[in-house]
Image (tube, rainbow, N blue to C red; front, side, top):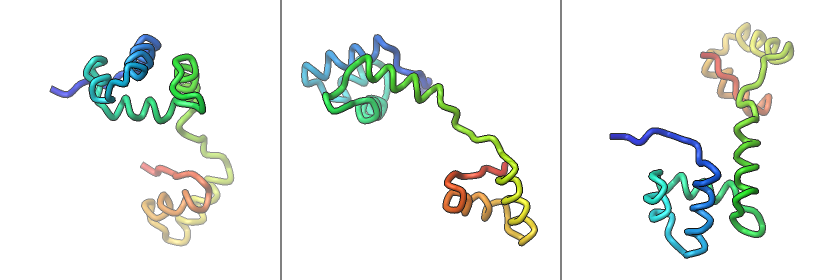
Length: 110
């Protein structure tokens, strides 16, 4: 049975910090927390600073990432861009593919 995804909590991060100080492996930490070892690897990679993995810093970074919107609103310039491409017989796949290079973000047209 697959494990259900969940966000790491402050308590989880405390366990990670303690076990890292004890030189435990990512696999061991993952088993203790009941998550995949890649979750631990990503957590440490994304939330460590110059002074290593710190609980409050990790919690703050994670909270800020969750608060950040993942999508952008289509403003007038993006709509105009899409219309121009459609009039030039670009497919939705082509428009989506070249939008990252042209606009700096990907447009999902589905």
